[in-house]
Length: 148
Image (cartoon, rainbow, N blue to C red; front, side, top):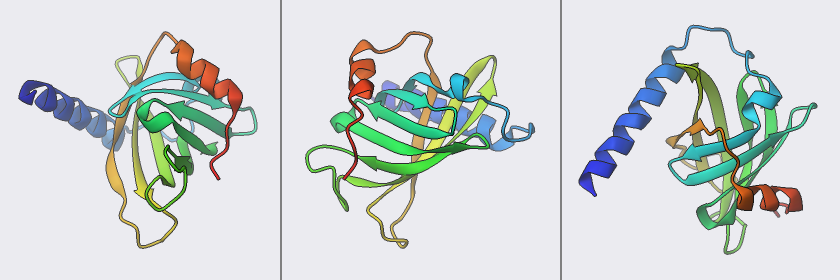
């Protein structure tokens, strides 16, 4: 268990280093590239980015949902999860940004509980793009359930 935790921490640190020190200008990843399957520290995630920048996503942890907008390599929006899908404990805001390292698309994000501007951001969301879709998440994304 300790080895897994250390490996996850090392991966998170490497992803953060790439994202923070990426010298390229923002806005270089298209919607199609960001759309798709992701592995993140909260499990698998499926994102769908529409041509107008609207984002809908689902992830495994507590049947989570993301709704937001994609601009300049950043998705900003709201998240919600079971059991209630309501804040302050089961919903809030998020921001995710993207970068590339060694031909792999990476993500780093932060999230917070509820709608309060004073809620603390949790900067521990990291992941990388997968080449194969998650069938269960693809089925969930088609349902387009809302965050209340």
